[in-house]
Length: 207
Image (tube, rainbow, N blue to C red; front, side, top):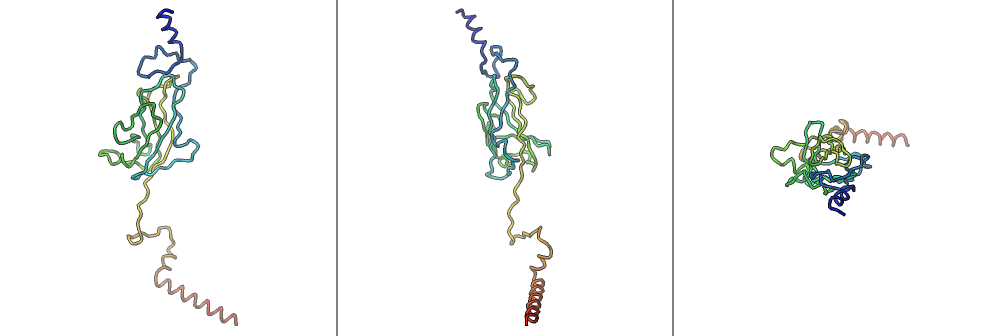
């Protein structure tokens, strides 16, 4: 077989290739679905996910890539918040932060650590959307066999309230005023007098 025939033969199959290299040698069927990802963590069958913005509280996102003929070089991951219009890098605070190799299938994130970086916008207590794209950018169009930008996996982040002891001034904001008055000396005296009168009346009637 001649070298030109061998070249034509090798280019006729459907094989994976790097997205940064030429794709002229890749045969992608016209019916090929657009590539993308399926989120595995948190599970799609789970109820709404709530995560704490606190020290030592880590969030794990996991996924599997699907329907790819052309494999990306790397992925960029952010969390988008419509409540304040901001986007936040998702990933470790150390380099390479929120841009990872495309063969990595999960990322671990600590929002509290990100907030400690000077100039970082504080997180809102709101709903966020996970967004992931490859080196071609977030606005690239859908194309069969290529990775399509992902926008999904809604999750909520909140700040846990700090503990305050009674000695430090904690008060029950949901308790009724009647209960608060009964806990005072005057209230206790009234309750005691009422119980004594009730007990005395019971003794008289039972004779």
